[in-house]
Amino acid sequence: MLRKDNTHLTNESISVYKNYYASVYVCPITTVFHEDLLLDDERNTPHKKQQFFQSRRLLRTLLKDNNLNHNINILKDTKGKPILENCHDLNISISHTRKHVAVGLSRDFKIGIDLENIKDRKYLKKIACKVFNENENYNLSLCSNYAEYINLFFRYWTKREALGKAYGIGLIFASNDKDYPESNHIIEWHSQAEYLLCVSILQT
View 1 (cartoon, rainbow, N blue to C red):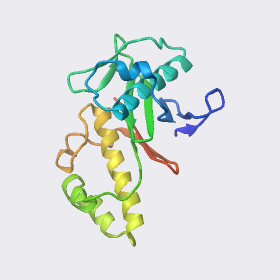
View 2 (cartoon, one colour):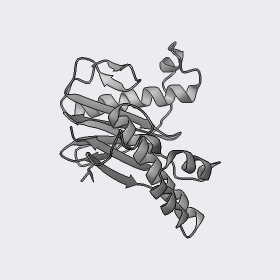
View 3 (cartoon, rainbow, N blue to C red):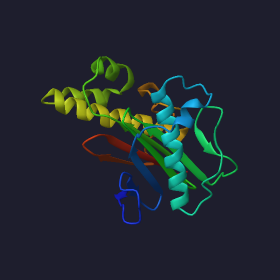
View 4 (cartoon, rainbow, N blue to C red):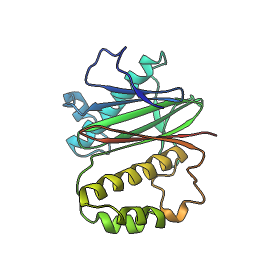
């Protein structure tokens, strides 16, 4: 089980979750440095740049704290999944909301993480019918109030996002459940006032 552990961390703004399989860091998005905003890349808004550079800084902090090379290049594979250059035994995952970023690291195991703000959004029920399976939608129909519905919706949503990232394919729709089962995953949620974090470890 991932436990929250900030014992050895000097930066109090970072929340740390650890177990035998993985480490996950979560922190608020802070003001991006001026030199980052000047860099020419595909992120054409200041907030997108904030998310990108904050996640890279946080990942390098995570690598350094685990006595790993924190100056290593972060690349993307053919499906867009972030990978560490020439480090086939290290697996990473990145997620963010408007206010927080999260990075995950695992040795030898595929990892996927998803971070979401739990709040009302448009078309949740339409999205649920399109993405979730029959059992998930049935459980949602049993919710006694809308707040309960929202909480359960995001548990299912973050699980499907995290599973998909561990497999390296993105969000898993119900139609693909048989091809990408969750039975060989360790799946955990961690809820804070500002976010819901789901971590999926693929036991290959």
